[in-house]
Picture 1 (cartoon, rainbow, N blue to C red):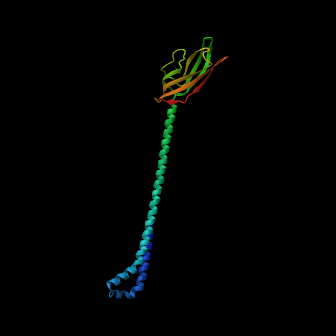
Picture 2: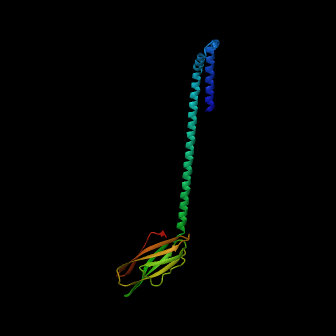
Picture 3: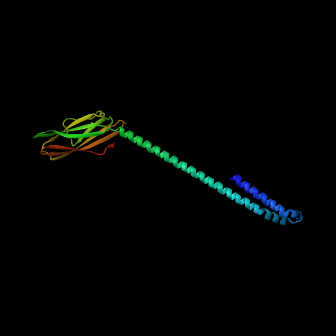
Length: 221
C-alpha cells in the first residue's frame, strides 16, 4: 500500500508539474521582475493543489495503517481468548482428574441388615458392612444409640472386598419401630479423612424384624 500510494503521488506530481511547466514556460521571465509577495502568491497557488494531493494520500496511508493495526489487535485478542480458553480447559481437565483420583481413593461401603434371633427377651440383628472401593485405614465404627452386641472395632484396615459384621441387640417388645445410625470414620487411600453414615431403620412385625438401610450423603471431615 505504501509503494502504491507513493507511485500514485509521484505520478500525479509529475503530471501536475509537467502541466504547470507547459502553462507557464513563456512567463518564467516575468518572475524575475515580480514583487516577492506576488512570487509567493504564485508559488502558493501553483503548488497548493499538489500539497493537497499529498495530504490526502497521507490521510489515506494513515487510515490504512490504522486498519492494519486494528486487525492486528483483533488477531492478538482472538489469540488471547483462545489461550485463555485453552488454559481454562486445562484447569477443568486437571480438576476433573483430581476429583476422579479423590473419588477413586475413597472406600465405598454397603450395609445390609438381617434378623438372626428373636425370643421373648432379646432381638438380634446382624449388620454386614462391605467395602467395594479403595482400601482405607483407621476405620472407626460407631452406633447411635449404642446397641452393639459386643465391642465395635475402633481402628482397623478395611481393604476392597473386606466384610465387617456387627450384631445389634434390642429388647424384644421394647418398641415397634427403631432407628440406629451407623457412622464410619476413616482415612482413605489419599490420606484424607472421610465419613460414611447410614440410617438403619428397624420395623417390628409379627414375623420378625425388617431392616431398611439408607445411606447419608458422604463427605470429608
